[in-house]
Length: 199
Image (cartoon, rainbow, N blue to C red; front, side, top):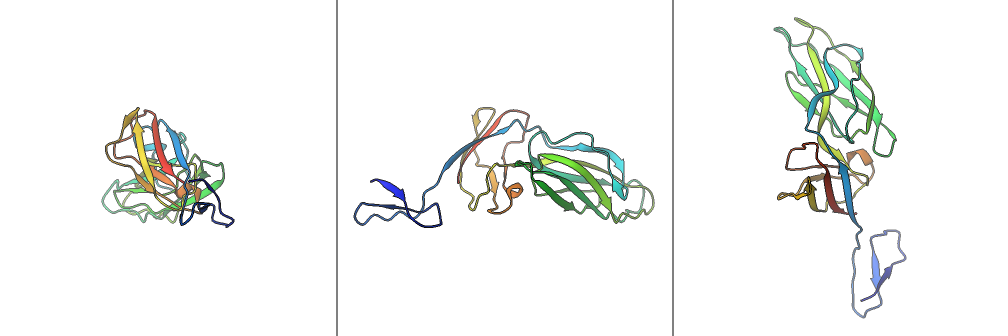
C-alpha cells in the first residue's frame, strides 16, 4: 500500500491511494546514543560549600546533558532559611536555559531540565540560623534527548550493549528541548547508553 504525505500542517499525517485505507499517523524512528552517563554524582558541579547569597564556584561540567541536583546539609541545630539556587547554562542545542531549584532541609532536590553546560550557580534568599549550612550541586539521573517530543513513545534501550529489561521513563515536551529526558531503570555506570523512540 503506497503512502505519500498528506497536504496538511501536521507532518505526522499521511494518505494512501488504496481504496478505503485510512492512515492516521506516521512516525520517525529515532535511534539515539546518549553518550556514557556516569553514576549520579551529588557534588560534580559544586563540591561541598557553605551556603551563600551569590555565585558558587563551579568545579566541573555535566558529563552528558542531564538534570541538576542540589543537596543540603544542616551543620548545627537550626536549619538556615535556604532560599533558592538558580542554575544557568545551555541545553543540548547550545541554547541558554535557566532553572530555579529550591533546596529542601537535609535533602536532595532534583531539577527537571537537562543541562549540557553550567555557566553559573547563584544562591539567593539564604539567611543563616544556628550555623552556616552547606550544599553540594551535582547531576541526576535524567539524561537529555536531542528532540522535542509531543508523545512518550519509547521502544527499546541498551546500556553497555545490553538490552534493558524494563523500558526507561521518558519525559517529553513539544516546546522545551531540555524537558525531553530519559531515565533508565538500570543505574548509570559510565558505559554507553542507546535508546530508540518514535518522533
